[in-house]
Image 1 (cartoon, rainbow, N blue to C red):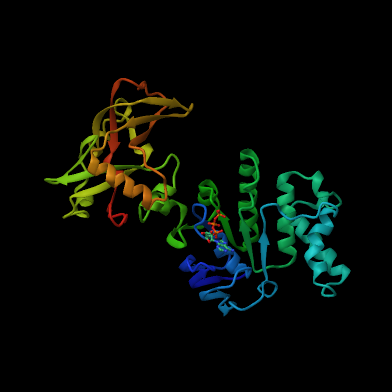
Image 2: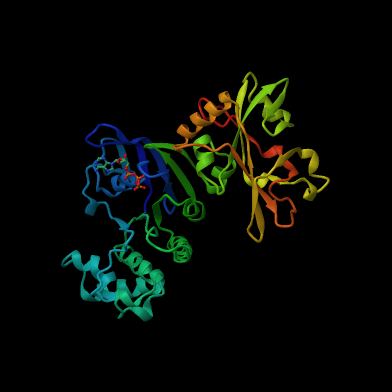
Length: 386
Ligand code: ATP
């Protein structure tokens, strides 16, 4: 196992545009890091640079403190686990796992091969399946065979390139927990690329969010969710997404399309001097005012709104509120959409209501908003000011 250090890594392809732009990350020995971001943000390129399949244009890559920029992939001792597992259909599980050992011709005696494969199979609970062919295995077992290969090589780190993206939702969920358990059991340094934020939030010790080749934030899943550094991260992490509502500040009050919000003084102090901000608030911090405990009410604001419709999900409901921004606010939302790499941002607020709420679309209702949970963003820089 090993630590991996990325120092100001840059990758430029032929057109000169940096696909990876000055990225620095310290990955500790045994750590599980997720690289996440929209299509084209550079996450696969970064992974391929680590494993040695792409040249490094600038910066330094260190494995256990040693510079490996110019080392061939086979000399880096890293194991890549691919999307389709790359198993050989005509070989048994045993031979599939043994494959990398046989590739290193003459390096391992038959006895050693047997020992390594048997041990890996035991760790992966594949002992009873060693004589089967991949076609006769479940998706989860196939994934484990692919990991078995990485284990017998005694690789310093595992690199995963969207290994689950071809699977249906149910299998993906099962596989996700298999990978997570396996990684923790083996304690092997792992870097995992995905564009799926559920995978990002559930698998990693830390998650690195990328946008257009640049690192936006690297933090634990909880910190990303609760303290996103900027609009992009705030909008990317969480489902349904965080709501963004334009607001003006006048006489110490936050004025929005929902009405004036009573924002804690310490939050307002952080945006002193600003005239316009974007309020960011996650759907779950709204609630049917009728269902909020008396003691909680003073910590938020109540506003009246007409929901267009609600969606009942059994354990909770989503409600939708459309708002009508004035031209200036609309411009702000357009800028925001660009910042977030989205086509447009609908002037709509999504609220999560308790399953017991009687609020329905088409009628006015009182909604409570926990104003302690608001984020205030600078509409120009996108930075989270709170
Ligand atoms: P996806 O999720 O779609 O795989 P990604 O985040 O993994 O996307 P990369 O594949 O790393 O993104 O690509 C990053 C940028 O580099 C993109 O703009 C892409 O078009 C460009 N790019 C990738 N590979 C090459 C290449 N071989 N030659 C030129 N440009 C490339």
